[in-house]
Length: 378
Ligand code: ACO
Image (cartoon, rainbow, N blue to C red; front, side, top):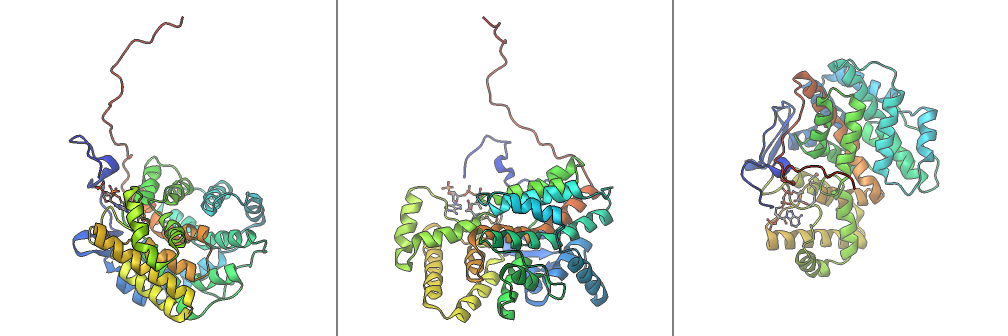
């Protein structure tokens, strides 16, 4: 941890900037609740669509509300031709997060409806983003392989439809459920960097699309959402469980950050990890493949070595990274999967910020040159 002068809160560490009724992380008990419900219970018993409804409306939907919510989401999934053509023209060298960022910005430019800042207007735009982002992510994954997009299927749930659009088929319900659990766990996490970014943009009374575009930029970084991709690159770099300890020793000596470990808020382990690890274990068991078993052994060995050596525990990106690999997604698509989920949390926070807005504008302690005269040009 970098030391700073008294009164300076670099990284806003430990600073409480506002109230929120959306979720709470309790570091002492390593727990997380969405609108009061423990996340492990939501992951065990509810669908991602129900969790989205909970985050936006404050309550789980009743059966009629859920049916209506699902019908509206399914109807909004297709992309119009202009968007599809624009996205198809982006260079394949750009990261899929750049594609998503561009897509959201373009949706904003195309949306003719007025953004009056009301919760109803915000929720309508949020639902359209929730519905369309998977279509963008799936089409982008396929075009990088020279494949045509697979249109969304309104007969399928959110998670199932995403597999259908990526691969042209839906895997076993077990695999779909593991993916859905990752979406529930990634949905919301209080004032993390990308959510706070969305709140900062919203606090200027800018529009929802600008706030989400900025949040995508913040999530892309490897210290935040980009870590799930970095985890997989790291596991492939190490390659063998027998190398885990030596690789870790070398990496720590070189002062490298070990991706998928550590957390600003949790000190003794991320509350979401046991749930995601359990889903990952199920994926490993059903694969019954020596290569997968080897990767899982490496994953476990590195985790053990890191906890032993540094006492630093994995965060959600650690099990999620390997789980997404086993589900068949390409590594550069991992952080976009996070966006497909966190769009719910971001937009819930945008609505909350507007409900009791105050421009977010911290102060800085100046440590540049003392005031001095501007030299006359010679
Ligand atoms: N690897 C090696 N050392 C670490 C790690 C890590 N992953 N995480 C923390 N540390 C060490 C730091 O080197 C530092 O040690 P020091 O005091 O001897 O200098 C100490 O622990 C504190 O670390 P900071 O980076 O100052 O803690 P901070 O709260 O700022 O960082 C962060 C949190 C950014 C998540 C950090 O743990 C990290 O970089 N992790 C790797 C990236 C990652 O996995 N990000 C995903 C976050 S969760 C999410 O977005 C779902």
